[in-house]
Length: 112
Ligand code: AMP
Ligand code: ZN
Image 1 (tube, protein in one colour):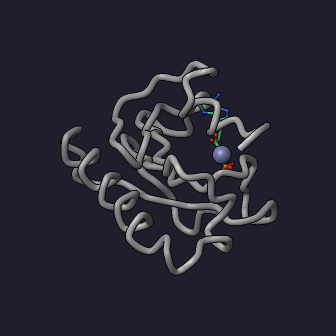
Image 2 (cartoon, protein in one colour; image 1 turned 30 degrees about the vertical axis):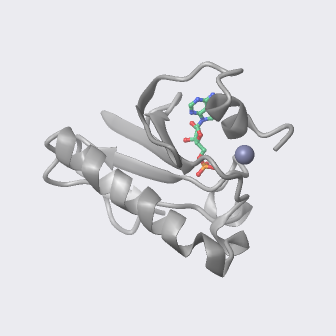
């Protein structure tokens, strides 16, 4: 998708600290980490937000979530938070569906 920051990271025209990549998924370190571990996990397919996902994306969404779990396991994270913001008022700033994997400090609830 043109003018999508995360599609540029997928296409390697924009640099990022990629730490995991499969046929369908890329994971990279957040540029502005909110915790000692802050990784973004995204599908290579451009879906602007969860509300735009189609029934044909169900398997892909599962893969993204499963990849987050595997990354947490590989990093030996016993406690972590997986969050996805959908829409501006929920905190979404980049319009390419992504999970945030956060860990390494005590995480408060509710998140605010
Ligand atoms: P959200 O606010 O949920 O849309 O999350 C977008 C995230 O992308 C934020 O945590 C930003 O810090 C992060 N971000 C923005 N630009 C970059 C970039 N070039 N490389 C890595 N992370 C980025
Ligand atoms: Zn995109």
